Length: 260
Image (cartoon, rainbow, N blue to C red; front, side, top):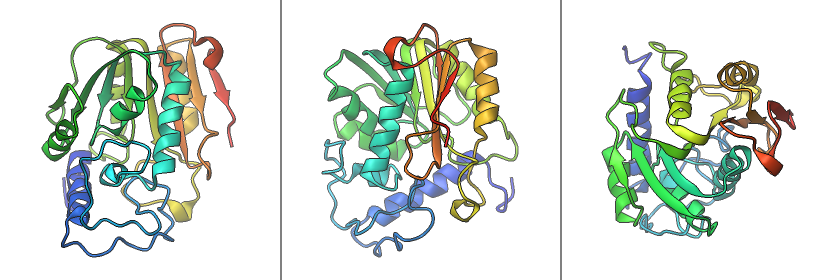
């Protein structure tokens, strides 16, 4: 790939390098939070103090700064995405694969639900794996670029891993979702930046998925699926879940809820 059209792996590596550099004590203050990307992964929140931060804090809800090194725009936007993963998947505890775990904030979020949890996390970046493990997240390991996780899990969650386009493999996210469904026994849920996002809030290298494309894909995989486009304050994000069994009170089969 050229510098103008990097693969998603190159884009992710560069993105993470920027996050870790910004987190160092020598880093300059974060960019102006009034930029249009403040609700995207990688945007800095108002007044973010990155200097001397304790990245090993395990408080998922924002008292600690780990959500910043994961690249989210704010603790609240990370939380609503996590809540959407659980809601759409009908999560009721069990074994979980966190595909693209970053610093493993999802582990601490799931742990605080007090539901049974057997957690496995994988990430492409050894720096994220080291950070997640040092924070006390169990079962975290490195996933080589291009590899697919093995095993079987009740739930597979993918939060923030589809941020970048890949010109060499433009529909890579569909292959990942299909594999995630194959290795899950209850549900897979993933979030996406939405194509419905205003043009002024888009970046050239990011992936903005069309909800209607994901709906058609979900329906081709399973008759039971949920698409939620209603939780993000700007309608700029959505979550899709592919279910192996009826979701019960958490949603209906093949229902697209609260499309903004």
